[in-house]
Length: 99
Image (tube, rainbow, N blue to C red; front, side):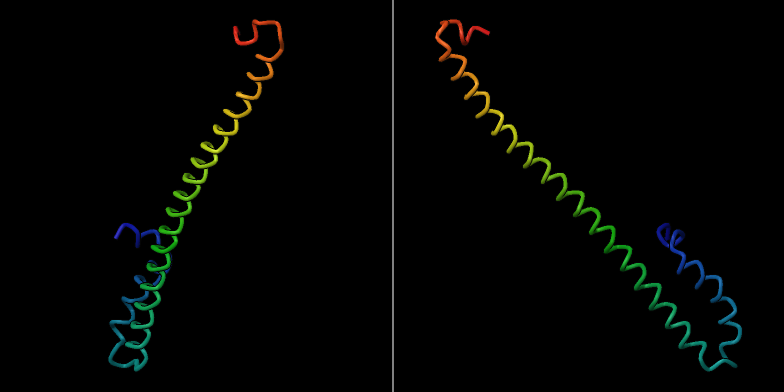
């Protein structure tokens, strides 16, 4: 119910449904209109639910991607460090790996 309060479709249909119920016997299209509104509201709610799911999934994927990238970079950095050490060690002054 809390989600419906934010939904503009729900609000509009809720306010107009009161007048529909009074004139349902004289208006032949009232039932059809009501059914249509219900269907539209249901579709809007489904769409909102799907959107939330998509957002959640996207956020998760982004997090995973970042995690992977981080791992990848650390591996890269490790190799760079090793190269640096080799270069430093091979400098010939004998104190390459002291600092």
